[in-house]
Image 1 (tube, rainbow, N blue to C red):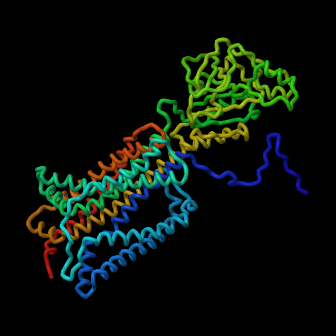
Image 2: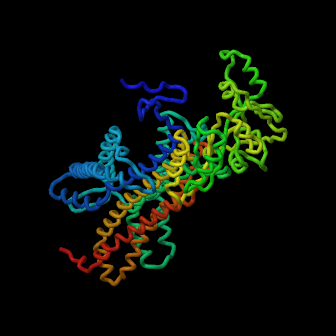
Image 3: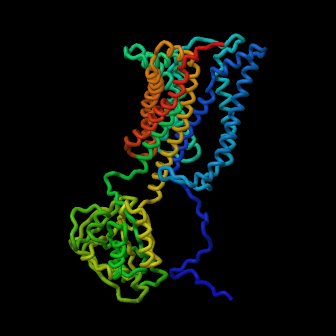
Length: 622
């Protein structure tokens, strides 16, 4: 017959299951806002890229449709054929993307990018979102294709535009970001809202702001390039690039708009995360690891030995001992002793913490501290009553009554000073209001059931330091607990930053591939002209630099517009979250530098096709 296990109680807790989800996770308002902003910042550039990718090869498609008109197809038929081609390409892309997702889902578990890794179980898409994407991509492809054909007339003898290029209008382009600001303004003024309506308001407002960047870029490019042609800069490569931008600026701006939107969204998210998840720079920021021994686990007399063993552990730089307990006034303790248990009510003891001056300076705002000092510490926003100097206290009153022993008495010194505790998430949970004393002022062995904590500062160059600490703590007592100094908020901020960096790099790489395709397409359409320039003696270096200028000028304008819009959007989001503005210029330079590297890579990859197109045989005509 099996022996029954211990009953719950007396420090024993029965474990019946692992991995239960009785308490569902509820994200806070800041977490919800950060998730929404990250999703919008990463998905909006993909939407712009899809709308741009549909128009790749548009001129060749128009000539092919004109050939169909020559064999008898009417205009409606050609439009249906163009929509069918776009739909077929979108469906093929969805199938290819789904197959690639299934193929790389398991291998991704073995990869780590910026110290961020995933498990295969984490890469399971939501069925509703899959259906939404599967229907939105073909719809967007067909819609963009029909919209692009509105000014194109495919005639049997060729392709013509229904009107000459018009001057781009600014008013409707400004209307998009203005509408986005109008949607965000109520939460900027009244604070962050909650619920689906408030979340949808943030999503739509931020999307309109980012799409406004893509809409403003063509107008800005036309305005700047028109002045660059009259600026008087010398150099054939510069004039070739400026003239090409004047003739086909729309195609170039569409290709660069994805990078612009991606950088603008990433800058806005970085501003939000840096202001929301970063601790206050004026408060101490110790990176502590806390080893806790629960009440009664380790006697107070053995606490220095516990601290010494942890200090000697490999990878530990510093170790500070804290011993905590409770105290009650003698008058209140005697009143409870003469009261029936059912009539006593809840006692209100004072928290007591014993630590050295080095640790007390981390926990409170102190002027000076020396051996034998005692402090009466209040919280940053006030706290309950504290004992007055000279008050006679009963140490560990609950333990004294339960054990039926004579209580240990201690008097608060007359020279006890008042102080304020530090508000910081990295400090221990018990670092709050109460009585703080140095070991010379209060003998910690008077506390019969103390809570003992050793705060350790680990060597960052020893990767297994935390494991060494866990092994030492387990040898001291199996009931010790090792807690990292970083709480869930900081871990969430770090996770958001790492995820944003990895995702932004992937989005920029994707958009860079599209920009490369667009550049190669433009070179192929200009193959005869390039061959003519080569036959006339134009050096290859001149044409190579012209390709660089042709890509660098729109990207430079787009990055300037993206940084300005991203900083403005990030400031609005910080006002919604009610957090101060802290700019991470290094992160912003990293994003813009990554985009610049993409431009240089595109130029380098487009040079070999450019050399091939400059051969004299490109002038042959059949």
